[in-house]
Length: 154
Image: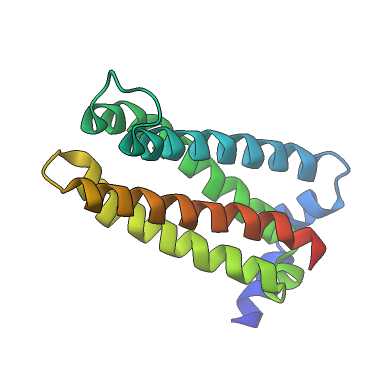
């Protein structure tokens, strides 16, 4: 895996981002703003499941309405995150916090597009199952954010 990581870190795009005084922060701004939007869409649906706001909308309707925003922000997070990774690929590859972030991201994506999607698509799940899915969702996405925040300190 390390040869691929090293190759990514030496591409023209990676070098441009790494060597520019403004390009890395520019990409990171999009990454963080998109992460905030992604977190907001996730929290709105999960908080609604707990009955903490937006009670005028049913969970399936709210989830359906927010899905385009979630997918747009997720796409931007993934693309910008990959660009940021490329600019410091070897350093990130050996960073323990980055590895935890990627683990939480993989689990959060898998959970979001399987269990969570099924639970929020209809009102046929039990309230306990909905709340458990919301709690797991919040914990997984929080793990992604905390892992990302820890990267600079590890």
